[in-house]
Length: 279
Image: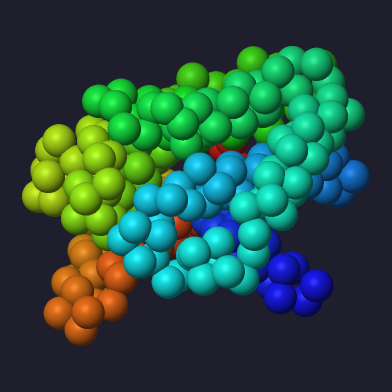
C-alpha cells in the first residue's frame, strides 16, 4: 500500500502540481479571496493537476516503457495502470465539483482548463497545435481565480494573456528533455517540429513576453519590482538552460529549463500580488 501511494505521488508530476497550486493560492490571496475561498481555489487546482498528471502517465505508459523511462513509477512497477485510472477519475470529477462552491462561471472556467489539459495528453500532444492546450489551460487558471470572487467579475485581459503566454513557454521548456525519446515513439508536437534550438528560443521569448505583459498590463507605471521580474525572466531561464546542458553532459535528464519556468512564474505572481495591482 505504501509503495502504491508513493508511486501515485511520483506519478502526479509533483513539482509542477505543487508550483501551479501555490501560484493559484497566491493569486487568490492577491485578488482578495478570504481564507476559505483560497482553500477551495487551491484544492480545485490541485485536483485538476492530479488528474492531468496521473492521466498523462497512464496514457504514456507504453511509450515510457519503450524508451526505458525509469523516472516513471508506472514503468518501474511502483504503481499500476489500474491504480492510475482509479485515481484519475475521482480527481477529474472533483475539479468542477469543488469549483462549483465558488460559482458556475468559475466552475466552467476550471473545467475548461482541465479538459484542455486532458486533450493535450491525448490526442493533441502529437500534433502541430500541441501548444494550444497549454495556452488555454494556463490562461484559464487566473480567469478561474478571478471569476471565483463574489459577483464573478471579468478577469483582466492582460492577466489571462500573460498566463497563456507563460503556459505556451512552459510547453516548449517541458518537452525539451524528451525530444529524442518522443521521436522514437512517434510523438510529433510543435516543439518536435521546431527542434531543440527553435524550442529553446520559443520558450525564452514566450516567458519574457508573459512577464512583460504582467508588468505593463496593470494600470499605472511599472514598478521597480516589476522591472526586476523582467530581469528574472531573462536571467533565470539562462541559468536553467546552462544547468540543462551540464546535466546532459553528465547523462542526467534535463529538467532545469522547465524548473526555470516554474521559478519565474512564482516570482512573477509574488511580485504581482505584492504590488497590489491584480484586479
